[in-house]
Length: 328
Image 1 (cartoon, rainbow, N blue to C red):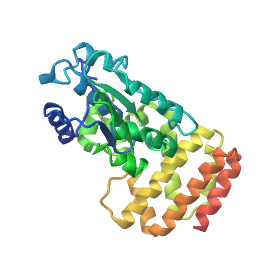
Image 2 (tube, rainbow, N blue to C red):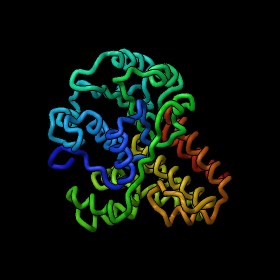
Image 3 (tube, rainbow, N blue to C red):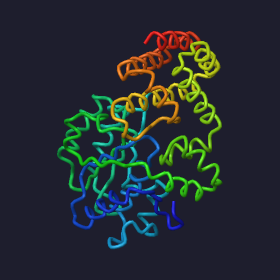
Image 4 (tube, rainbow, N blue to C red):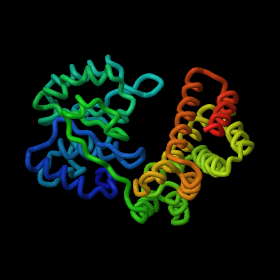
C-alpha cells in the first residue's frame, strides 16, 4: 500500500488506464475477470478496482483517503464482499454462491455499487459456476462481480462469455527488483529472487519471506537437473527427503511441475512467460525430452497429487512417481 492507502500495482499501466477510462466513461463491466500467473498481483488489482469504483472523489479515483477507499483498504467496506473459500481445493460451495446471489439483490450501503469478489477462482466447481450464471447474466444495476484466476480456462465458457477478461502481467525484472527493495529487501536479495521468478513480485516476496519455500525451490531445481540427466537415485533421494512433510512435498511437486511446463513450452514455443523457478534447468530438460514425454511426466505428477489426496503414504507416492518419471 502507498502511504495514502492505495494498493501499489506495479506495471500493468495500460490495464490501469483502461479501467480508469471505463470508470470515467461509465462503461464499467458488470463482471470482470483478472487473470494471470499466481503472484502477479491479481488480488491487489481487484482491491484497487474496488476503490476505483466506489471512491467518493470521481476525478481522482482511487484517492485512497475518502471513507470508502479507507474501508476497502481495511477490507471492512459493507459493499465489498469476499466470497468464502471452502473444501480441500479452496473452491466455492453452491451455498456460498446462493448467499452472494441474495446479497446482490440488496441495495448498496455507502454508494452506487456493490462489489462481489471471487478471488482464486481456479477451483470453482461447475455446479457453483452454474449457480452464479443467472446473476452474472442479468445482474442488478448496482452489482459488480470480480473474479481472479490463473487462466481464463478456469471458468466455463457460458460464464466467461458474460464478463470482461483482462490479463494481469508480471512486471520487468528491473521493476520487480525495485519493488522488492521498497519492501525492505537488499539489492542482492532482490536479484536472487528475480533470478528465480523473473518479474513475478508475489512469488519473489513469498520466496524471500518463507524459508520452507526456499527449500522447496532448491529441491525442485535439483529434481529438474537430476531428471535431465536421468539420475533416478538422486531424484528418489530428493523426493524422499521432502516426503517427511506432506505440505513441503506438495509445494515441491507444484514447483517441479511448473518446471516441466516451462520445459514443454520451450520445446514448442520458446517465447511464452516462464512459471518455474529455474530457467537453465528447464532449458536442459527441454533439450533432453520431447513435449509429448514432458506432458506424460506432468501426468505422473498429477497422479502423485491424487495419491496424496487419497491418503496414500508420501514415501510410497514418491517412489511410484520416480519410477513413472523414469518410464516416460
